[in-house]
Length: 181
Image (cartoon, one colour):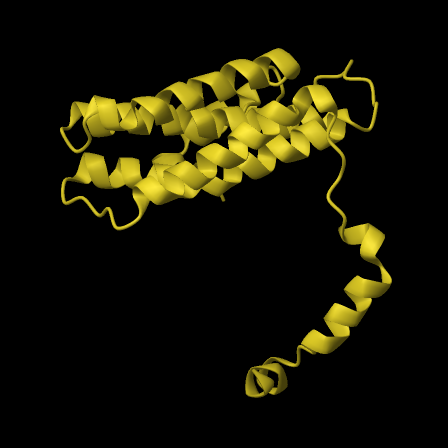
């Protein structure tokens, strides 16, 4: 570790000292009582899905892609839901679709939608049996429903360059979906 610190120029002891001195900056934001179940169940799904994914590496392209989607969004979704809910705890009015909590919730919902589709793909391609993944599908659906309930403006949130109609049309019109130069 000392060699790594010298090679990279990173002083872990200094970072730890700064974290201790500024502990308040590193504390997890509060979550309102009415949002705790959503937060905990998002974390639980992440843990359960991680266990389910362990050691799985399918050969078929559709199943492999579905596993990659699940692996990619697994921790991302729980973190985005936590960020959205912690923003609600700040008592900031959600009157704007541009509210940060809506943006985090939108990202979580996109991930949850993709995860649920990936689980269905695994069943449809015979890689997973429905009884084995049904609890994951049901939990994903519950998280979608509850996220939409607690953050009703999330789906309407416009992510720059992703959801803006003009930008989307521009990206789709360019060859390969890339940006024009």
